[in-house]
Image (cartoon, rainbow, N blue to C red):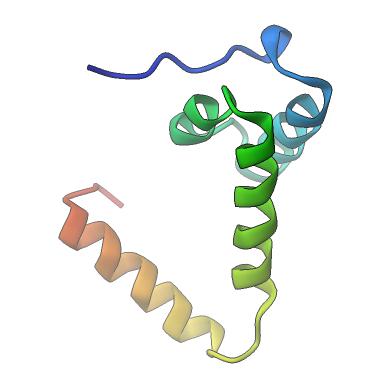
Amino acid sequence: MRIKGVPLEETAPTVRRLYEKSTERFGHVPLPFTAIAHRPELAEALTTLTNAFTRSQVVEPRFKTLACLRAAQIAGCPF
């Protein structure tokens, strides 16, 4: 069973802002994020965590990219 995502017009104001930033960055809101939008506090926390990983300079950007590609392969996601 899949969790139905929250449409933009039904999101909490804080999540609406995150949807808009996601659309600016990716051209759309990724489906997993629309599902987590049912819990605005979790959506905000996930965004904060993701930004911390993205901005961290402990690992070189090229290794982050390789890790993302490998994780997608393991999960069977087309990349």
